[in-house]
Length: 443
Image 1 (tube, rainbow, N blue to C red):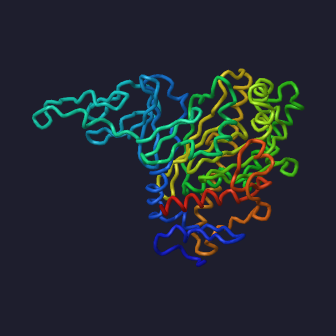
Image 2: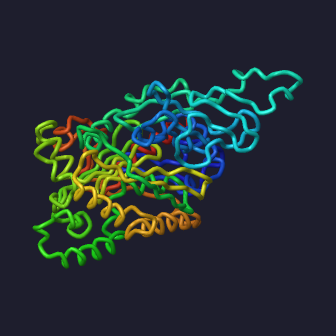
Image 3: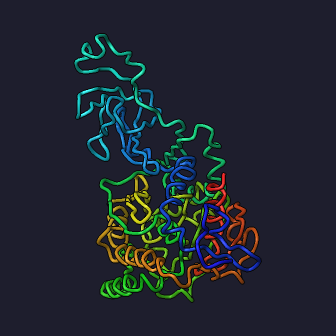
């Protein structure tokens, strides 16, 4: 393969795939024309995570977000259903929501005062009689709906393509891993108050890679593991309250844990590792209750194994340090907005909730002990991708240990990955993401 980017758009030219070889050309992070095609072919035609149902419980509750660069908002209807609309007034295109979330059964444009019901109908046009000398047909100026909206166990997705395959088909075997988070309480899960938003001067795919990249953890997050290991030493054995401890075996003692990675269909990726101290996990207090409902094997996956679940193209469900939802929104080829929330089981004890929030703050806040290191690493990868030598990322780590199909742990959960790898420090899960990326760009 040549060491230069394809001269004309050809998705096959960005990936060098041969027996035993899988390389990605670094121009995938840099090419503005390719970025525009991603917005059309990937974000314009894929299921994109919008919000969690717990954020829009009441009639008129809404969350504003994006599908690619299209501004949208999701809003609860009077009958309990969920709809989503492009976040633009039909009059002159002004954004309708003043905040990222709120409640408004009638949404009024702050620019010229046009008003819309929660179902998107235009219900008031200020100075209506002055338009064209007669009344406007309000039905013709209702809000533009997102064509497809669907939910899976509280997670709300939308798609701008009305002909997209059903959400369940898109998620496929990833549903079993989503269930490990969604089923942690018989009462359901809820997003805790607040959100964290920060910017990354790097291409969005670097965050997709990083979400499943177990190889960086022992290097990039060693300061996190070392600092919290010292803090834990001040607590002694922690026998009186193990939830105050930080479970960091995946960082400091990789040789003492079992781990793995899976490539799923449709570009989804999984990375997991056993926990050295499961009793430090806030969910541990519910173990007996959960086993009675779900069985020992599923609960073993819930509590004894930490997981990152990356849903194509830009959603991460992270149940490692704490329970976190993360999305990354592409702004430009070299600029990405990242937002995270803490997700928690409804009904957990006050001690477990407190521990969950503290662990979330330790790792997932923009000013935490981990996120700044991740951002610096990804921005460095983007900057270095502009160098004119060594222009291929050779995703070779773990290729010798990769197997087709399921390993024992996957079979126990009832899933059939495309490939499995008996080690968190592998890069083979990226194959599936980039094959799906290539397929969608070529469609």
